[in-house]
Length: 246
Length: 221
Image (cartoon, rainbow over all chains, first blue to last red; front, side, top):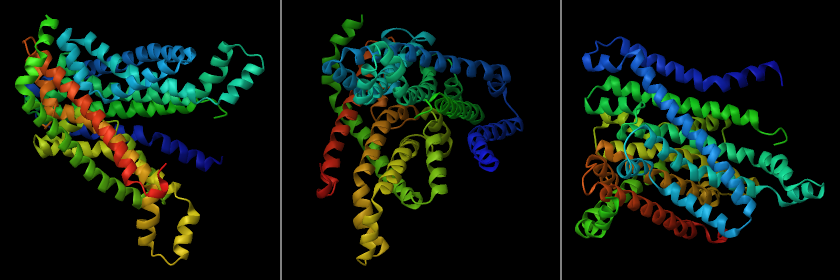
């Protein structure tokens, strides 16, 4: 690779964060020129923005981590069982899960249980569990049977086949599933405001209710920026972690 | 208490099924209108960019970034401009449908074997005829798959649009939330959510048929 294409790649790689920073800068510059009334200045200050952003990130990252810890081992188990019925059930449930609206899951759980942060966390995990489970299982199933057999023939134990052949070969599909779950969570965490779980959705909803466009705009742009940056960062990790041969 | 509320579900539905059907039809209409618009726009964009590397990667990257934006944020941003109700709902549903449709149009057109296009030209077909009679029909199954993915996406997002007074079953889900603690809260939210799931599965089933009957006969499996 020449220096020139290297620079171009670096430029392309950082286009997204640069664009996000520019948009955020423009929004904050515009808000800075406004005369804020009491409602606006209560939300449009550094402390409030940081608190809401932190809540949002905690909700997103913790739920995605829980999903990874719960769904990937479950998928490995379902894969190990080698039963068609188990797989059909997982795929079928995954399809139904995909058809379920996130806002329905969040609100139903709030009604039958209680409102608040924990409920939002549980519904996020419940919502993202099935897609990741299904993706992981699909990834493991896609591993070429001949490769698996060759590994067994070389004398690898089933565990070695799993760790050294199947999981690395399935990793792109598994990571793609996790990346989708992360981006999904940012969106669903926005809805968490409906059940009093905080996050940047608060600002969007308050801005709408109280007709304060500046509050709404800052909340919406921040949440969009988080989603875009998380997707971008996950993409970088995906490229980094992918086994070299793939 | 939960059991008691659930026991009333059949009673609840018996009293409100007309309401539920109307909301379901609204939901379906919002999804269908958005998909029709998104297909027209998305296929057009796909046609314009599929064989030009730079516009292609720019439009796919832009659509990929656009789809990550949380739907509540987009609906809220649209509402000062477009007001409440159908307008922001349709615009945001079209917005989220573009990525799968543009991407699949590009993939579908690129998969058409070059020698087929060349022999069509060699037979004296005009570029427009090659496009309409060779390229688009061959790419069609892939494009329909993109529309199908967009349909699944939009059925769920349309539920959130009820928050900006949009049409559809989301109205019941949010009514469940606003009547939290009352007897019918669970009935409202459960009816809304289950009907969305049902609608999504029905639409997905319909796409199996649409894919089959809109695919040129020679390509059917």
